[in-house]
Length: 401
Ligand SMILES: Cc1cc2nc3c(=O)[nH]c(=O)nc-3n(C[C@H](O)[C@H](O)[C@H](O)COP(=O)(O)OP(=O)(O)OC[C@H]3O[C@@H](n4cnc5c(N)ncnc54)[C@H](O)[C@@H]3O)c2cc1C
Image (tube, rainbow, N blue to C red; front, side):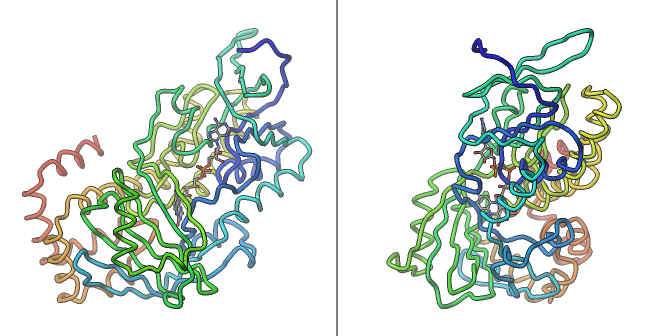
């Protein structure tokens, strides 16, 4: 650690994207002195999101109208050969202005003079220290040293805070363009293909005749993306801009450590089926803020205390559902093109769309999975598929041990 004077804070949050800003905003209601370190100079940039979020968003936060760019009425799910199922039901996801969502909570948190944002400042490391039998942290950034009681890693999929705690996310790479498009005004589409098996190709209607088209995969993302755009007959003259990004892939990580915890993508709080993390992290942030307040009230910053008041509530609220997302993903990524076709046929012939429409939940899939497995044809297909790929059974069992 460099020889520098120390700035003293109660809490240091690393990362001022949606997780860090929302947590800072929730904590702005307390009297805690908080430093937020953000590597980038401008909040919300670079823009790296498809911005499709379920209606739960409106229940979790007070959602300003101007942040909602569009609503989706129909979801089209497309098989590798171009067969598709169209789902439309009660769920009408929001398409949001992600940059403004990040800025909303940044601006709100900043209203509290106890919360200081250090933009363009990179977190580097922490050291544990003890004084009078009490633990605290020495934190080094690119510009200052900080003494704090708590450190919270909201620093995304490649979290440095996590790395220093031996927590590492598996990741997939995403690429997206925004294009002028006359179609898809209220229809989102997901294109499945064994070539980009860790997720799907997406078309999200931003509104105002603009679409966000993207793809995510572990390998060859650029080649796959070119192929996908080609298959869709996208005219590259209609391209407005391009984004890239990283998505954590797996189940929720360990969250709690002495004086430290992780939140958002850093914690793997992301749905393995869609790569969506916003509903999950907003849910987790409420437990996180409650936990921070309890830590200071009880002067207890131990791993055990943080586990009880943050990790366990998160596991109950989202952790188990994230495991179901991962199971679905394991199944989908092992589907061959033929499996996709058979599965789509089963859904169509057995009129299962209405089940998906009725019980389908973008965030919590457990109920739908059990409903689908009650159908004998689906159950038979899954049984045969799993016998063919026993490695999935092994991975599923390991998840619940
Ligand atoms: C292409 C793409 C499309 C997506 N589409 C959707 C979607 O449609 N719906 C949805 O719900 N989710 C979507 N997601 C996922 C969603 O964007 C993430 O779940 C969400 O951004 C996670 O927020 P976060 O604050 O945890 O992490 P991030 O948004 O990754 O932010 C981490 C922040 O920490 C900062 N940081 C990192 N390291 C340091 C350091 N050492 N020092 C200081 N600062 C640091 C970074 O600069 C960044 O600002 C998408 C992701 C991608 C990549």
